[in-house]
Image (cartoon, rainbow, N blue to C red; front, top):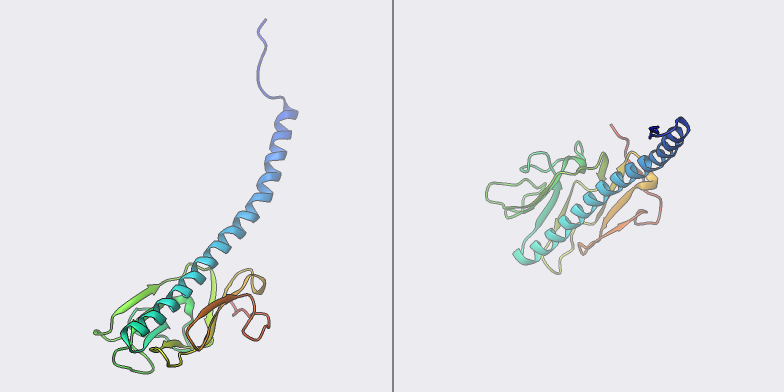
Length: 179
């Protein structure tokens, strides 16, 4: 006599129930992991841009600009947010508000991956040579999770960046409305 092998209906239902519970737990965690990874990558890229701008200003002995941009040529004004992208360039001609000319080298450029908003309280950051005060300010990174997951890069007058979950005064971060 030949015995049939396979799963019974109850074994199959039990396995599917356990699998669906595990998937239900894993998917939200994975989604949160992806959002955290994107935010962290963009925050780190902005910190890198600040550090590069600061060191290049000291090395070149003239101002270096970090600004939001769409085209790697012009710095954006109030109409543009940092989530469009940012660039670092040597401001050889000293033009303010800054605009990159053909003779001014592009040092660093980045387009963020964050699905949210990146808003700064300054239109650009100017990093000056040693012993001269640079632009301070705060750039807030928010994704669809809002304020609880927001991070800020706070740039001091010396040009040193730090990452925090509160603003420079210790207040909760405020996220811009997503469009």
